[in-house]
Length: 117
Image 1 (cartoon, rainbow, N blue to C red):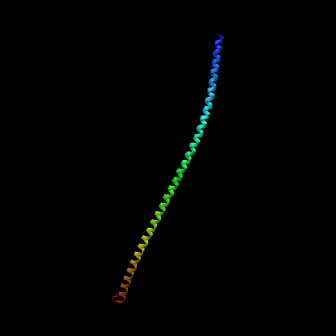
Image 2: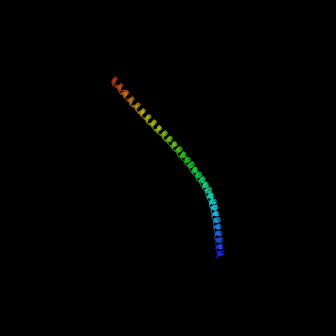
Image 3: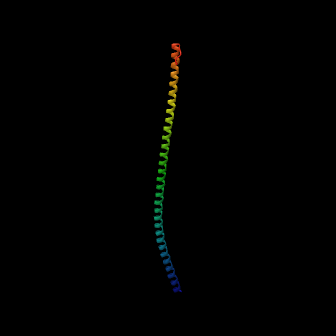
């Protein structure tokens, strides 16, 4: 009666030892997998940061191009507006000149009581 019980106890102890070894192996495997995951996570984060930086740089370059284009367009519009204003001023000066001459002639004709042509 004792022998079968001892055999069962040995088997149970052996089974417990096997379970402990399996747990130890699983723990080692878990640690190894976690280290691998951490390494891959770091790699992915670096890649994402790099892509983010590239996208930011591309956006900055595009913004710079747009800014330069808009600045050139503003300059063109400014020059065109200045030319239009100068043309208007020249026309206004000519009109004032013509009206001044007509008014001057009219005044001289009235003062001299004769027609100047």
